[in-house]
Image 1 (cartoon, rainbow, N blue to C red):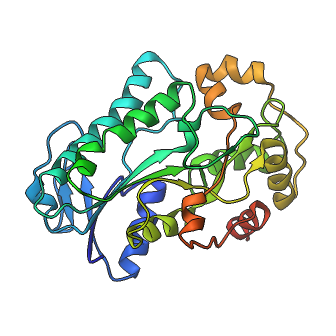
Image 2 (image 1 turned 180 degrees about the vertical axis):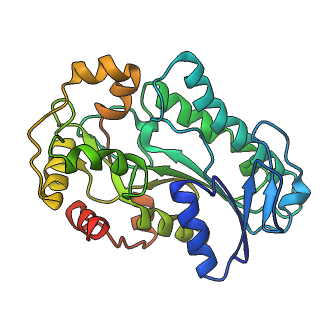
Length: 297
């Protein structure tokens, strides 16, 4: 890959991906909503058509843009923003790829929310999708890439689990209460958390770009998911803090509404079958080691 376009380049995953690609000698063109400030930026609007000619120089597009799922309570308006920010942007890029003379590879973000709340059932890329708002969003999100696939482009749906890094995302939100000694399990703590370190998430995206055999769904998760109870225990152990104050399910529902049931209390035991079958090796396969590497002073 010589030239790769990236949407969502300012986000947790996108910013790390851009830096990693550039360190490999790849030219990265960031898709931005404001006027471009240099030749390595390309203005786009997720709700507007994107000219196919703008993607002609690209070998691949990594599409990561989308409104944060857990940033705000899920009102009707917020649910519409979450859905449209994913579907409209993906469709715009996919249709531009479809109109290109030589369609670039499309690696488009998705999420393991597509599987729904599945208890301790082992889930791989071939598993059926589940129920709930997030599952509906993920199905529509992936379907929006169909124009690119029909045009012959290789399309990969990177189904992210919980991406862990202290600089952002779920782990950043956990650190303040856990460091204060008031962290604890969520609900009964039995729900599985399918996680991946930020570094492995970025490496998986680059691996997908360079692996012609990877196509369709690709679970971006560690091969060792943990229950929320065990996740809580390990995080407390790494920080040297007690984890004795649970967050009752009723309190989470009262505070966060429907979002609590689908993001905090739901669980899915998801495995990275496609990555493992293609020969990908995780730098951080175990949670305890991953947390220690991230949180080392």
